[in-house]
Image 1 (cartoon, rainbow, N blue to C red):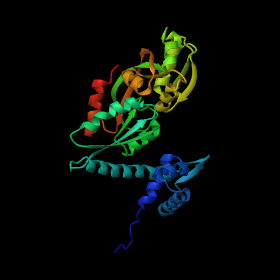
Image 2 (image 1 turned 180 degrees about the vertical axis):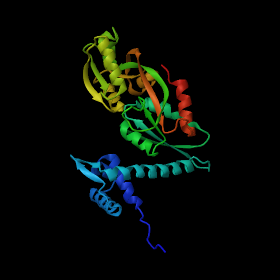
Image 3 (image 1 turned 60 degrees about the horizontal axis):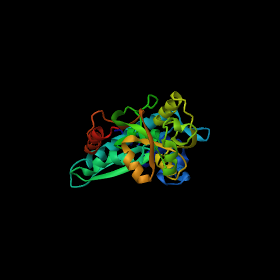
Image 4 (image 1 turned 90 degrees about the vertical axis):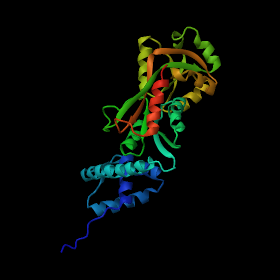
Length: 304
């Protein structure tokens, strides 16, 4: 009779390994897990000893997966994705408790737009517990692939370079308007858009779709503004704009909200530039009732 005991994986060790692999290093993994670096290193060594393989090797200041590490990471992805699927499935069952909706917000999405897009989820017959996380698109999409979030709100579809089999759902688009504090708005409103020649501008970062569209638009009209600030976070760009640092763009559909909330004035609007908004999910056919409500409401309201 075979008395050999099966080899078991410590799933806590495996989870630490998975987070380090996603984060690209122990330091960032420690920040995410809120544990010390020695603790993570110890967990990794124990996992490597149990599996009999070295899972990482040094790559500059970071770590990269070895061949056995990549194999282990693929299995870990499936394991934790399945675990999250189980949790989501149970949470979506009606049992007198709130429905959980986990959303990743790409940090360039204006907060006024995010609020409008997410609002319908909070008016379902079943109470919804909304969990929002704001970050760069690549990290949010990694969480989506691991089923840690239900949806990512983005300013663009999944790029071809991203190895994630997600689905893009276009929510709508909007023209782009320019805003500024009242004194700047009065100065640059007349003669818009030519008035933006040499004007102080606050713009989203180069990696955003909106920035690329704005650059092309400026080039086509031979307008050369002075870029005084570039921002990953739209909220910070809006805040500097409110303070009078420069003129800044925002979606035309949110003109009234932006002017009211930030106490700024409209400089002018451009219909040629379209800012798009997407819901990205792992399912082609959306099943989560809160995500369905968001998509249906956005397609009716988000146009401008």
